[in-house]
Amino acid sequence: MRSGGRISPLLFGAALLLVWELAVRLSGAPVFLLPAPSVVALRFAQAWSDGTMLRHLLPTVGEILAGGLLGGALGLALGMLLGLSGAARRIASPYLVAAQSTPILALGPLLVLWFGPGAAAKIAICTLITLFPMAIATLIAVRDTDRGLLELSRAMGGTRWQTLVTFRLPAARSGIFVGARIAATLAVVGAIVGEWLGGSAGLGVLVNLARGSLFDTPLLFAALIQIALLGVAAYGSVVVAERLSSRLIK
Amino acid sequence: MSGASNSNTALAIEHVAHAFGTRAVLSNISLSITRGESVALLGANGTGKTTLVRLAAGLIRPDQGDVHVAGTPAQAGRPDVGIAFQDARLMPWRSVARNVSLPLEIAGEDRRAAHTAAIAALARMQAEHLADRAPADLSGGERQRVALARALVRNPALVLLDEPFAALDALTRTRFDEQLPELVGGAAILFVTHDIGEALLVADRVLVLAPGGGISLEVAGLRGTPQGERRAVLMSPAGAARQAQLYDALRTAASVAHHA
Image 1: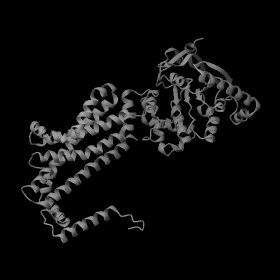
Image 2: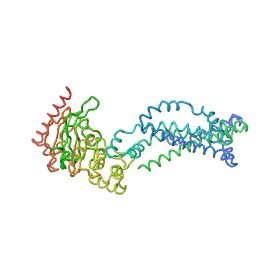
Image 3: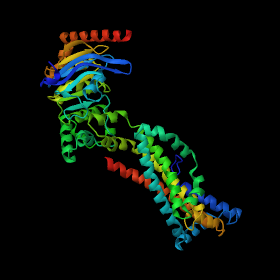
Image 4: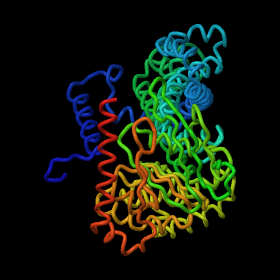
């Protein structure tokens, strides 16, 4: 630690875990209520070694990838259409705002009714929950392109397509990726909630199993940690994609 | 003679009128620039200087009258017209060289050939060393140098400059004013500015735009004077007289605009 008092994040986390561990041991809290971090760490390792975690992780990752990519692509396309066309924007904006104001998760039971208890309903939830932040971020970023750049494109004889790919999209890149960052974390939420509504595998199912039939609170904590790591990975992959895209347009 | 039919005319604006909504900006203005000639336009705010540049660039069409470039109607994207604005309008995600090569890339030229041309245009602007830099790392003067290189990369016959040095510090601006005629080479120039001294330094002819869009005064500029002597001539009694003449015309135009 420096004399200025700046504590590194790792040290801060380790201190929190230590306080948690000591509090559980000194208070004698029962393990089904609050397991110590050491117990959770052991259960986490065990769930990985016996294949439980991987078995539940893979379906969730699949749903996030499929739903996130589909919702992201549809949101990008919809946002670009609405950002470029004032007429389309005037017609669709009220509905987009209404759809955004509807809690997508509340549609979960309906989607399960339509698509069944399999992966399709979870992918549909992930698609819808990622579509709107992507569409709105893209719409705003594309609509608000610097007028000076658009005039420059015209002065150079740029076609509509050239103006879009050479001027508008690169200028809108940061704004679009703000939407993608939000969408990435929401995709994880969508998949987990979708799995709560039914299904045989997935981290949401594992949370339900650990809490309900297994009474295995350390496993519940281990699953929550895995979900948090998945969220970080989803967010991190968007950050990496953003960096790669900046190299592409240079 | 019609500018459209004269092969020696780089830009011909004939009886042009233009309004934005109910506000008439230009009414019945005519001016022509011959090949290789540099013309500076002076005028108070709102007299339509930028509108004239945009008409010449084909970015807007006149409500009345004709605008011809090298004998054919003005049209956006012509390879023989280059344009630079008050703000450099560089794309921050592209390197300097790729900003300069952009007009060639838009025109469908091979990327390598476009890069070579961009480096040559930068060298002409004495800015070759900036090629790999990001626009964010450039000073105001360097940014305008790059914007000028981009305007000249297709070797245009007509260069439209809309207050390109307005945002620069006095010293950098003076250097640009003195070098511009040589930097642009043989191209014709339409140069819009608020600065009387600048107009005289860069132009063969200086025109004062009156409110409503007429030309209220025409004075000979100093472009024909050798580069090293222009400033001295500008500061001489003869140069001061020209400046005073332009100042009076501008002041009259501004008072007319104020009472209009």
